[in-house]
Image (cartoon, rainbow, N blue to C red; front, side):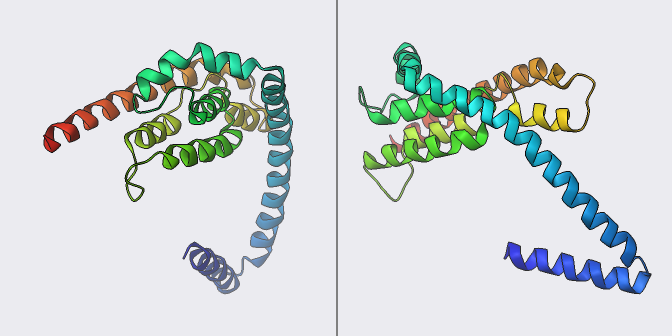
Length: 196
């Protein structure tokens, strides 16, 4: 469906430019946008390569395992249904770590693996389990200390201080994550009260 929408927008834009006599401006806009897209991707590549490399070093050195063990009490509180030493805990912590450094693209594969592990112990496979819903809430509203994507965009656009977004973004994501946890807990209490 989305493909049809894009085709419709593209064709209608071209037809409109022909009738308006602005074909040259449309061509110029297309080529300028393509150039800007390439510059943006190169800027993203530099930041993502740095942080993905750091994550890989942390993984290979065992630092992620240490972080997972240190944060395991928090994981147990957030995911009470999760059995001890379940593989999902490691994937959840890796996902949280990637999100913490603003690497949403790097967090996605770990999130998918975590969901698969959570689904493997789901008693009702056609419905999302409590842990799955909690993980989805926390993944969506994750605490981000260093928003790498936004910083790289600001850097590529020539911002005077591309890092001045770091503290406001960190505070905003703390608020969003806290709201997600509260909403998750309240909704589960209400749902368990209705079942009784």
